[in-house]
Length: 329
Image (cartoon, rainbow, N blue to C red; front, side, top):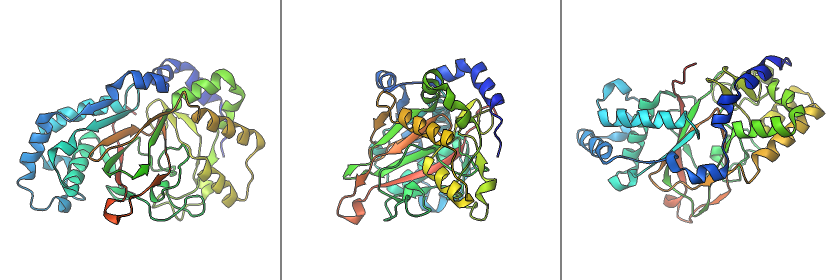
């Protein structure tokens, strides 16, 4: 694995203005709600008019393309969403779809259309991947956090070296009875805090580390071929990129028959502590009909443990979409 970290360190140093722009604290996000955008009435009306001619919305979810529709209001609105998700805070919450009275399949279709207007939909899990408790625990099985209800660690989506969604979406159909809050942290804020307070840990975060191969399509790839740094620059996305989930790094080292070096483990400990710093963590709970798009390269996310309603039809259900949104790279 690569251990030359000088080039990445120089890029982060020369790109400090960009890092500073993308760094934020909980208080800053709470004070500036530009990240929350209601759906304009004309977008809802446009989709209702489009929906009238659709016999079965579910039949289009996996096949419809951006070029198949002419939705100018959604196109204009998506430009605003793209600017927000690639901008200052790295996420955007879309509210107001519930007011349209749409069925779950209609919501899925609108979610797909919005995603297609933002960029390319990546499909290792299909266009939409259901996020619901299936009785698993990622700590004892090679399954993604999306199939569990246990508290998730801070992470970014995709362990695959070759598949990186620079943006992902989560649409909420049904929230949990209790819990299931989304926790967000600026990876650039985390980097700056480590660089200022404990810079000795940066080389470990700039070098390659094995990652477990849990992304569909990677099953036959040895972990030795699925190694990359935690922090990179202009590699997986434009500017700084953070790719991390400690659990899958530790599992990958076990599979490779290697031990994590003490200095690397210390760097991971420091990284986890800064990610969990309450001053850095912004939390929100998605309501039914709300969608959040997150810049997967500069925002780490987490989810609190949740408890479902007793009735199966009320169980927590979200849909995740992986996107490749043009960002200049």
